[in-house]
Image (cartoon, rainbow, N blue to C red; front, top):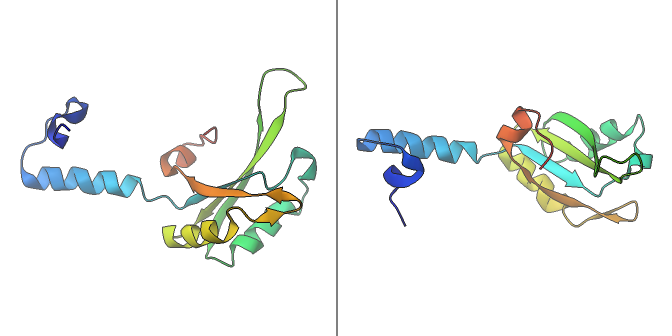
Length: 129
C-alpha cells in the first residue's frame, strides 16, 4: 500500500502537516446523520410523521433536524417512489444509539433499515445515496 503522502497525488511534508491531514480525514467520517429506509411508503406520509420521528428519535438524543425525502426510482410517471427519512442528531454517539435501537426493527409491518449517512452529502443537500 502506498504511503499517505503518495496517495491522491498530494504532497505532504512534515509530521505536523501529516497529522493535520489525518485529523481532517477522521473528522469527515464523524457523521451525526442517520437515514431510515423502508419505514414508510409514499402513501403513509402525513402531517404527523415528522413529529413522530422526532419524538421517537428524541429518546436517543437531541434531534436537530428531520427530513422526509421521496425519491422517484425512474423518469416514468408510474415509477416507484421510495421514502428516506434523514435524522440529524447533535452528537454522533446519539445517532449511533438510535441506529442500534432502530435498525432491523419492525414498524407498521415493515423492517426498517437504519444506517449512518455521509455528513458532507447531507450538508450539501445530496440525499441520493
